[in-house]
Length: 405
Length: 108
Image (cartoon, rainbow over all chains, first blue to last red; front, top):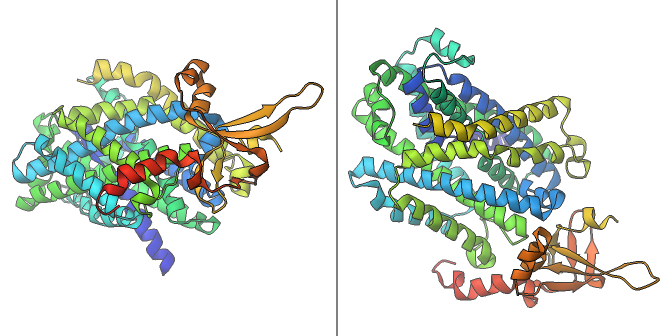
């Protein structure tokens, strides 16, 4: 019974981590501009992240180390520093987008412009970090995140054409706006294969004191959670394809988001959307903030754990405090949060190879993972993901220029 | 033991298992006619910057903290130093932040 509860909570947590402003925005954009045609990009991203998250969890459960720990040990300081700078810059931008998402939800709820909500939202995130334990962040916010299931119910109730939805699972070439099509596809992959997800998951395995006995649990949580998250993203795409696309409406501003649920749920659709966006973004903001602080502390060998008092790990507490301040300063400038989101997702895609290449080495290192090393199939999948990451890295910036508009 | 694989960049814990940093550098002593001898391990930003570029290293004035090799035990997965971390310069920043900033915020 305890194991079942652990698995259920783990899956819910993974969903909480997966669904954030990036996946909602890119899925809505894809549905509005290309109807069901880009479902394959969410499915492909989901498949990649299942493998990476499973491997990150297995690595930590067996070795008792996090992935950043091992990267510093095996690849040395120079590689670690390069990855750290790249990841910190991208994560700060993604965090700014998530804080923007929380603010947009508050704007939709109150009518007060989102910029005014930046400081209260940043303070709320900091307060949860300051007072909360890992369990509170991991499970509390994620359970609240179940409200995002309203997208799945909405997609079911709107009766999408099944044949077209299924056809969308298979990749196809665009009929119009080719550069924009591939730009949205790359952004979806950047939103799905988020490095913060698997780095955070690896630290979470240590916080939850996983060991070799958790390998089966890890596999079920990684597969179940990421699949579930992908289904919610696909539901957002379906809603946008059914509501925006037929009217030729482009998804250009977050204020259009309620239009996804109001036609299905009426008055309550508006508030379900506000709650979904607010909670999903709050959860993601907490996870990204923690991930940057974890990465810093682990790389430099500081004391770290969200379960300790801030004064017992002052540098760790200072790291997350500073992270929130910098990201909030980006949000408070008033740059359109949707633009920050789309840009940061493309940038995530551009930097994927530096985060994923170490997996191939670490997951085959006997001194860390012993008999739980990757088999030929898992290695083939990692090589395929790395190849995809290199393609994304090369095309994302040119596509941002030619297809981002 | 392979110094690079088993010691460099590994987590260092003090004698009460408190994390105090990573092995940022290893200092060898070379005497004529004798094999090189490991003398110290180093912790510090200057050492780290030196590993990236000597120009960056020279820009840092704060000297790294050295622990004599005799106080170091290299285990399978970690490095243990027979010192009390809070009484060493390794936690200088940690203690300063605790005293001056973090410790002053309510709820710390």
